[in-house]
Length: 197
Image (cartoon, rainbow, N blue to C red; front, side, top):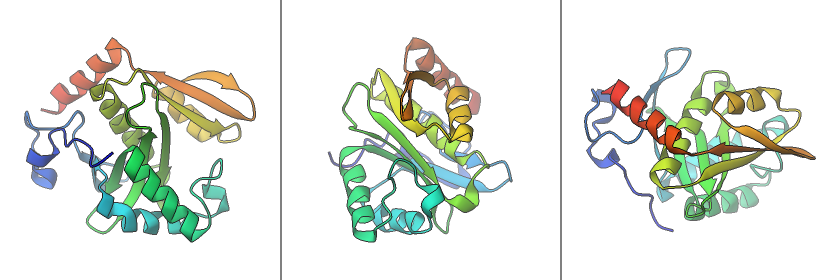
């Protein structure tokens, strides 16, 4: 699928940015609940090693529904497939990538969303911010909705998704949720952009 469109990122001034008309749908600068500063940006193919390092730290309790894969070569193939077929966004500081969200297939009207944050950085708002960036990117790409599956036992994630506007559409072995990307979502993204400038 190639590199994702760089909606405003190529002219954004990053860490020194005061927001401008060149900002992407959401400002790439983010301060988490503990005051740490992050940059949220589209992932590139050359981020594969950074993503592999992120997922290397995941234990069994950090995996959901079989992802990220536990075996290194399977995990590496999964990362490469997500970068090739999906819209990927990462959260990073100057040292490393600590979060990754993607939806796939990137050109589907209702792609599936997955979000992962390094276990040491949970409960800081990073996953929520990544989801907001993915939703903004999906609105810009004219997607109808984002869909996801979450384990019924992952109450914290379900609560976060519901706060973001996801609705439960099916309960079986997992919970299937959908975030409709209607006109009011577009207005929300535009409002966020205007608030930051």
